[in-house]
Image (cartoon, rainbow, N blue to C red; front, side, top):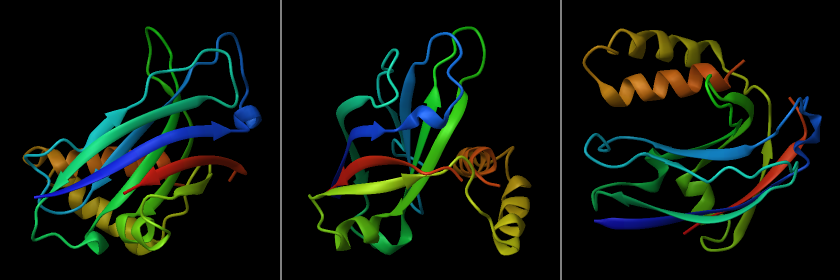
Length: 164
């Protein structure tokens, strides 16, 4: 078993977002890849009230099979605005492959650009359509399709994360 630590340090300049009422940003971190059906794939930071540059400094632990290759996995960072009584609003997202995180220094902080919607190629949409046919029987496929559909479709905000 291989242990990977991911620390969400902060987000900055979320001010491009229309802040109406109370703004409570938080980050969902998903790990996507093979051999994860029986493992925890999603972690969430605590929400931070009334700031467009929240400091999180929260560490999450992912366990991967020793047969795994970091090239097979990606970390999806999704910044949302907490909304009590209704679904949380997408603020921005970013993507980092596990191999990129390790190539960029492993335990060194990595600054990720956040975008409102991520571009998706036609091949990517085809993969999502194929996976969507497995939603009733495959929990991993269901989560992957939901997150990718929510995040895909460009704002210049940034976040800092660290993966080891």
